[in-house]
Structures are given as C-alpha cells and as structure tokens.
Image (cartoon, rainbow over all chains, first blue to last red; front, side, top):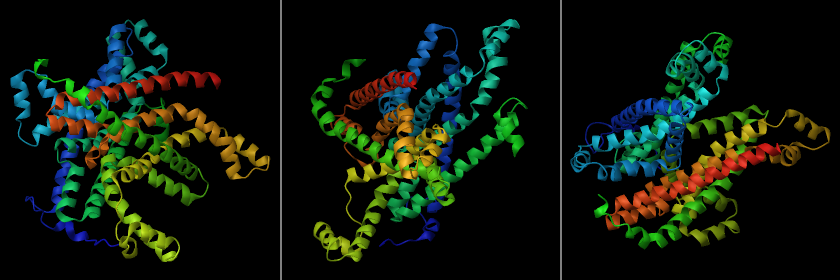
Length: 251
Length: 253
C-alpha cells in the first residue's frame, strides 16, 4: 500500500493551536463524555417517568407515553439533531430563540446535542423500564395493594427497586449507545471525539492514525463503562433473588 | 407564527427529494440489508462454530463494530476502501497480468499498476460501509435465531447423512430465518434510519437532498420538518407491519 504511516504524529503540534494532536483528541473525548453524561441524566429521568406511566392503569397517560416512544423512535437521530438545532429555536418566543442561536461555541451546539440525545434516549429507556416493570410477577403489585400502599408507594418501594435491577444490562447498552450516538452531534458543529479525529486527519493527512486513535479511545471508554456497570450491578444485587447474584457467586 | 414559512417549497422540491434522494436511500437500505444479512449469517455460523479461532474472530469483529459509532466507521471506510481496492486490484494484476490484469488496467488505467488507491464512488463506499457495519448486528440476530433451533435437529440431520452445510442450509437456517423475520425487519428499519448518516459524506440521500434544498432556499424549518415527517411515516408504518407479522408468525409456531 502506498500510505505513509507516521505514528509519532500525535506528538506534533496541531495548527489549530492549543497543543498536540493527542491533546485535540483528548479534548474531543472530554466533550463526548460530557455530552453523553448530561444527556444520560435527561434520558434516565424522563425515560423512567414515561416508562412507569406506560405501566399504570391510567389510559390516556399510557397513550401519551406510547406516542412519545413511537415519535422519537421512528425519526432518525440525525434528523432530530437538525430539528433541535435549526427548527426548535424558531418555535420558541423570539427572544429565547435569539438567545439560543447566539450562544457562544461550544454551547451553541452542546445544548441542542444534549437535549436531542436526552429526549431520543429517553424513549429507549422508557421501553426498557416498561419491560422491566412488566417482567415482574403480577402478584407484587397486588401484594403492595394488600399491604395498604398507594399506587405511587407500590411503585416506589416494591416494583421499581426490582425493575431497575432487572434492566441493568439493557440500560448499560443504552448508555454505551448514548456515547456512540453523541458522535452525530458533529453534524451541528460539536467537536467531540469523532469530529476531533476528522479534524486531525484533515490537518495532518494522517487519516488512519487519527481514526485508529479514536477507535481505541471508544473501545477503552466502552470497557470502562462495562466494568463500571458490572460493578454497580453486583453492588446493588439482592442476594438469592436473580441471575445477577448467581453470576456473581459463580465468579 | 407560521406566517413566515413557505410550505410550497416542499411541493416544488418533491420530485428531487423522492426521485434522487429517496431512491438512493431505499436502494442503499435494500442492498446493505441483503449484503449485511448474508455476511451476518456467515459470521453467526462462525461464532457458533466449534473451531475456536473462527468463533473468536467473529466475536472480535462483532464486538469491535458494536463499540464504535457508525459515523466513525463511515469515515474509516470512506478513506480505507480506496486503499483496499487498490491493493486487491494490484494483487489481481500481479497474479495474472495478461488476463484479468489487462482487463483491470483497461478499466482503471495506471492506478492498478502502481497499486495506488482507486476511485470509489460515494454509493459503493457507503454500501460497503453499511454492509460491513450492519453485518455485526444481523450476526447477533442470526445467532439468536440459530440458537433457538434445538440441537437435536442438527444431530438428526447428521444422522440422516447430511453434512454441515446441508444441515445448516436445509434444516437450521430456514427455520432460524423464519423465527427471526420480525427482529430482522426491525433492524432493517433502524438501518433505513441510519442511512441518513451518509449526509456527512455530502451524498444526496433523502436527508441530503432535503438539506441541500433547505440551504439553497433558506427554508431549514420547512424542509427538516418535512424530512422528519417522511421518515416517521415510513418507519412507523414499517414497525406496525412488523408487529402484525409477529402476531401471524407466533400463531404458526
């Protein structure tokens, strides 16, 4: 192949200023993680609320929740990104829209990206939460009622603690998805890890080194998330109740 | 509030959006699905194979593809495919300079001889990317499908004197496909939505077309809302169909 490899490129200074190419990539990683974490907070809170609502006996609320999930699952993430970035500011009061549009970088693209990823992932978290609550035996809710708990109390003390433990593995993959999906924010100008690698490849012409480094950083991030979530899973597992505890004992 | 909007821009650009854009999107989706499904099935068979190196290789491939963002993979292949193509063509040329080598030189000129990166069109590049990327996801689905068939069927096949390929091709895979049709179709709807990401290569897929009109006419709001609406209608009707199919298949089983 007629490609000139140069693995020391990471220690060269980037023409954008602010340090070496490696530094550029690490700053990108920082924005990837910050975006993902902020969006995850929205996704988890909103997704849990919507997921829980969909398991209640309140008809209209269930329908509303279903509508939310279908809406956000059937529009490509990239299109949603554009909607938050270009369209959303036009539909809020004019001074708010102006304020959003004139936010200095990187906030101008960071805020829409976080909102977009948060609301998008909330739909997927809602699916998991609903499945988790649905997988519990019916008797648990009845038992809660029999103990004299109200519906919110039954959810708070009986159903949700177990449901969230059950859905830990799918939530882990949703969290990894949000990290990966944050790369879509490069289309609205957020310089996260993929965009940083792209910029590095454009300035240095060392395309494959840049992408290899980004790939490795993503793989490392994934490994950390998997181990972290497994640790949490084991910490919160209820002994003798579920597969998690059994697996932990087998280790 | 809607006074400043010009919804007529959608009507004016409909032919361009659907004839150029949507055709690209649908073609890419269908071809990448076929390719991804084939490659994914092979990967699934490798993953379940008793040959340790095959299952390790397939496992590593799937894990790698599933832990990096699709956008990064798109960039990777956009730059990598020309080099791989150049390398392969060069090898073919060396192998048989008079026969196939001559054909290649005639078709691609000096590039083959030098082993230089070849020109790959945007369509070919994105098709290769999506096939290779989606194969990892189809692999996981097909693996679950194959595992849903009881092992006894494999043994029964062997007992009848069929070999591995016959047992797989005639007994296990047809059933695995049928059981997994709803999941495979759901994955294809996701693929249909994901193809919008070729936007980053400035390709005129449906979203690319909408975005070009939006920027040319300064009608971002109208065009992006319309694009979202079209994607929603197609994906939502697709998932409704899948749900109905699921009910039907569940009855048969």
